[in-house]
Image (tube, rainbow, N blue to C red):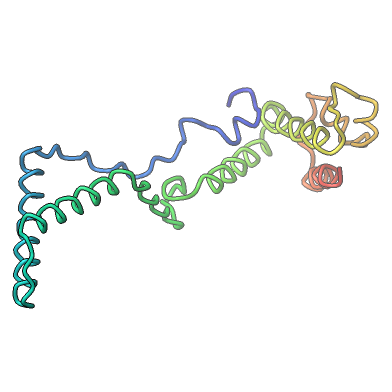
Length: 192
């Protein structure tokens, strides 16, 4: 693992989930596109003129053609500026490894769980990965709630955090604490 910061928990770039890539668009011929639109206007003209004549209404064919061509141009312009289609929802079940078909939050939480499980057995991994993240979270919580960090006002930060959490954050050579100790540290952070 890298530096052990929040980037390790949230940002592992190589594990980005890739959505199903859309099929490459086929190049359509401009002449086929124009011919298709002309045919559409011609068929619509025939239908409109036939309906109008059957109702004993006399209407100019040129007027009908120009009205339908204008309508078709407006529809094409609107199609060009419409919003992109909504993304497909991801499959909540996921793959066997749990990385494909899940949302990003689940993947990040899964990485946290894996890091904590590995750190539970390896004190060096705990010192490199878990402690720096805990320290960043602590500084952020202190900054948001009290306008300080551990570096800017160590005396007040130590007073707010308490000696046990302060000692854990500053003694990098410590062993992985027990689960109940970690729970108490999280409780202190939540109370800040």
